[in-house]
Image (cartoon, rainbow, N blue to C red):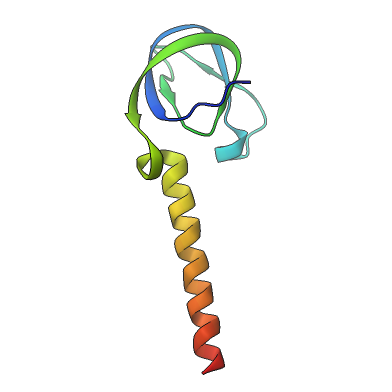
Length: 87
């Protein structure tokens, strides 16, 4: 159940399964391996196995950071349109 704090590329893994439901909505755990699906995303949880990764992005530059930024921007636009209606 460890939370991945950053995006990265798997460089060593042992039967690694990740819960990506927070980002994708898919409830099935995703098996990660060096040759098939080595990308690990921040905000996801390790459900089984272990691994090492090279960090490629953190904070607002990570996949979850980009999503939160976009959601924040959409919220700002809604607030702006409400403000204009009140004028």
